[in-house]
Length: 215
Image (tube, rainbow, N blue to C red):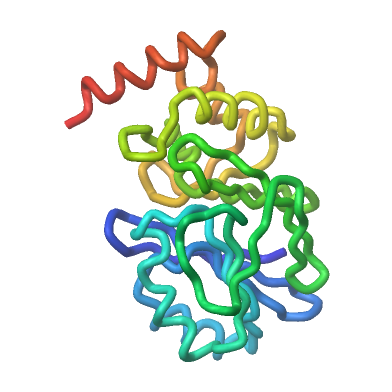
């Protein structure tokens, strides 16, 4: 599976275009930025966009969805099955351990609530890619300061799901907040106390310290 990132939006958001080299079938992960450059790349590369995958429904991650749909009206929209967000008739609700095909490539759906209660990650096991939205960034975890956030759920999502994946899996986060755009799970653990806590209580302490010192 191939991936190309586009950055912009409200706060250095990443929008990812992924596609299968064999079939040229493609999906967008989070329509979060003004898409003219994405449209141009799709057309120049003879890519066929058929799916839009939502990591969670905070506005900054879906703000440009309405720009994609008129141009690609048959595109299917995938998000957590119990999201409160309303989509059009192209919506397909998904749950933990579901699979999504992008041509010959396969993504495993991981339900990872905490930052928000409809958070999903998309894992391509074969090519060792994990699209984490706002659950995990390079160097830190997502925040839990808004309605429907839950720090205990975030801890479980990170430590019981994401950190159990192979260490050489590359994290593709929803924002460019770190010192590099992507990082492996192993390197994220080595470089950040957010991912090396020995207990939920220690993780909460790390999170609280981050919020206290945040500028």
